[in-house]
Length: 80
Image 1 (cartoon, one colour):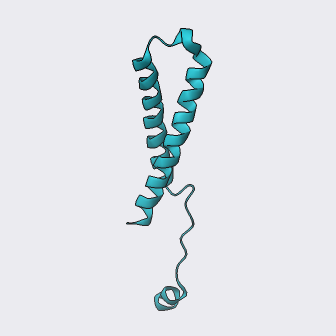
Image 2 (image 1 turned 90 degrees about the vertical axis):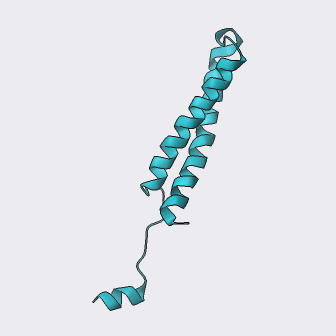
Image 3 (image 1 turned 120 degrees about the horizontal axis):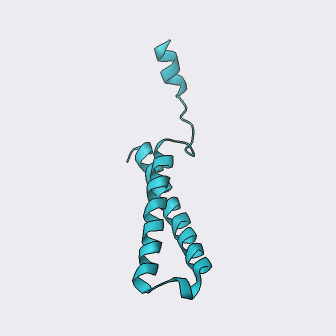
């Protein structure tokens, strides 16, 4: 598994959690009177989770929160 894929998967997992928490906060703010039915509540949570996963994968794959790559000493000497 490449480092970019691992970073994207970690970002997607973190984004999903954040999206679910955001969706739950929105539902809590709306209250029972603002939610027409269980389908709409589940739909809001799933859309928030999907949006968070996509955002997290994009941020994770760009390496914004990834560890910086280091070039091994042997590679630097061979290149010089």
